[in-house]
Image (tube, rainbow, N blue to C red; front, side, top):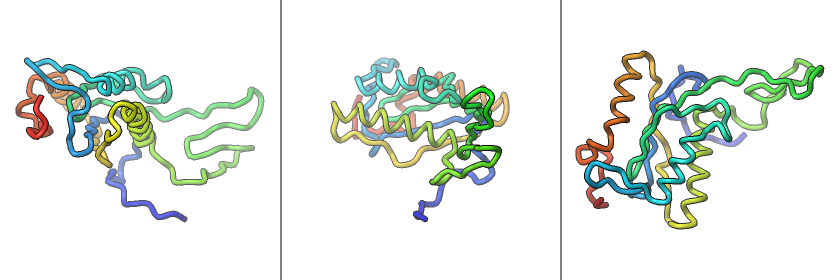
Length: 185
């Protein structure tokens, strides 16, 4: 069995259900997504690709919604809602159903050949992979930080504070902890 690195995810959260505040940064905090001038974000081509993907996650991930996000010069913040897939019958009248962990055939679950990747992680990995593929056509050195930050949103108050942070992030760019003075706007 292959060795996997230790996950930074909280063991008590399944990451297959709920709302999460997620932050994903570029490698070395390079401003690949655009720049902020006069309190307004100006997206680069790579920033537009990321924005398009965050705007329509259900085209490829029907159990993911991104109701609010902001793309900054070298990172993005988003509220990502994850819902657990319900069992789906592949063919009407058969007992073959798809499940989250693998496949159910005649009521016996066949385990997947690899580790179970939570839906949130699968979505972030897929998003990063697609944006990387597109971005490297323009910027061959484009990259992401290996990991990302997530926070399970636990209350309406938590959601409100996070939404305000996202909505005001561009205006506070000069004070942002991700603002990298090595890369002027």
